[in-house]
Amino acid sequence: MFRLDGKVAAITGATRGIGRQMAIALAEAGANVALLQRNADDCSVKNEIEALGNKCIIIECNLENHLQVKRSIPAVVSELGKIDILVNNAGIQRRSPSVSFLESDWDDVINVNLKSVWLLCQEAGKFMVPQRHGKIINMASLLSFQGGLTVPAYAAAKGGVAQLTKALSNEWAKENVNVNAIVPGYIATDMNEALIHDEIRNQQILDRIPAGRWGKSEDFKGTVVFLASDASNYIHGHLLAVDGGWLGR
Image: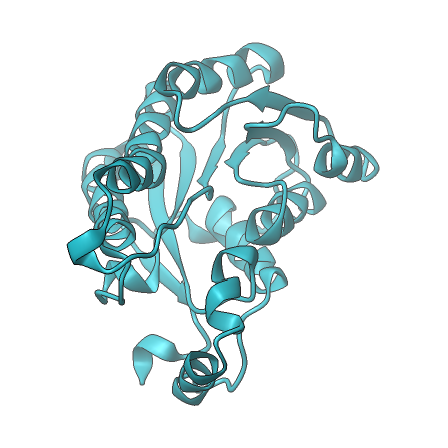
């Protein structure tokens, strides 16, 4: 039920952190993997996946270039024959007080974190809906539920990702296409280095997490395989928190 043998998965943001661990987990479960990444010369994850005996390709895809984004899913199908799983993991962050938040930063975050997700979902849907099966897994955030501090664009984008996930699931559930999202809590990745190194804020966060620790990238391996597999066939429009209990407190 949890195997992905013969499936084709495409994932963004897999060169490091959570995305890297999820890409490897999909391969370990049997999937062939297409890495949609800005730097097509970075083959470290590709090499690791191929060492498992799986097919792996790299599709050059700068999420700020919406023409590249639109072409990436057809490119996956052209090279690997189909697409069964899409994981929209990549994202960027900009931090600034809202009164001085740059319009260019707003546009960058919305374009990468929300518009590219929409475009990739739309392109994947063009294949998944006619074939009547598919799994789309978006990356939401605690800020899909909460406002955060000095991250207005990120909060707006991740709120949008949550609602997009629900909207698409409403349309595509009857087509046997599952659209769900993972909600990471506070995870020790590059994006959160500023918080980790802020001694006061770091302690405040730790005190608020029932599990008593920051999450690790490896904590997402089982989650992504579950949502990509037949084990989640009757789950639609769900936001699955991997947060050490943060939202339940």
